[in-house]
Image 1 (cartoon, one colour):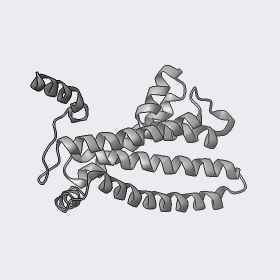
Image 2: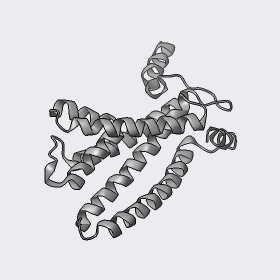
Image 3: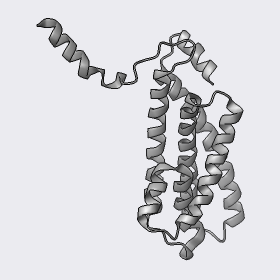
Length: 195
């Protein structure tokens, strides 16, 4: 993926266009997987689970997939081998999804940060009331967990683009780590140069 990104950069393709194409491709994959899973769940549980709950789980799956794809854009800054990155994502999903099961009995002070910062926790907490029914009560609503998934996807995309800008690989010029606030010192330099 990094090689493709670097070759496209040599050709003049902007990073935002590359990110949009990666997210569009990921969206198609996520949509296909979510629809296949929902079809299986819907056919299996059509008489035990209301259609609205199945649709809610589907939306949660889509947002969880987007959040994981965005998390995947951050990994190349730290891990160069794709097999290791896939392993890291698998451990990330399993560890935090299992950990979310233990958060259900804790107060909101412990549950909410887990849902805000970790997508598997937010996904598990979003679908727990739907799948667990009346036996599960959480201090955070399923809708808030879905909002956390959207927030995580946006933050991870921005973080991934930032890390790529300051460490672009073989074919790029790295930007200063504070390039996004350059306007602060550019104005000061132009004022001191005029004096």
